[in-house]
Image (cartoon, rainbow, N blue to C red; front, side, top):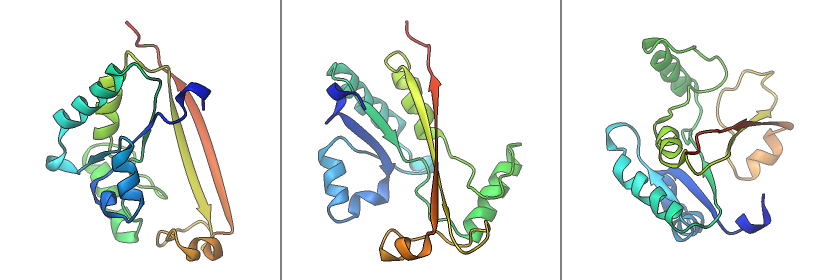
Length: 161
């Protein structure tokens, strides 16, 4: 992280996360943009908030948590059906990303960003690669997760006008 951007991290999060004790308040006070799914998504509000961040002229990192759903076999099945209906690749181990908020963020800020970083984290447990349920972020995480793998990919952006 660049030294002059510390304190200028902004987040795009699932609407329901604003009700988490402490975290929800923290993200609200530090520029969190809460988004709803599907038809409830308020694109104009998100674009306006991003524009206000850009207008300050301060350096910024925008962190998008695109998939806030708990992973279950039922959710995976629905995700696979969604992909198949739209002619997208049907994924076996992860959910098909829903990209509306990511697209709006990129489109709103394409003249102000240099790169996009994709960070994928995979948690290994005792299920031999066949995930059945999401590990909770409580003490269960420590005991159920034998290993975590993190892959970060930088994609340069050259849309500056």
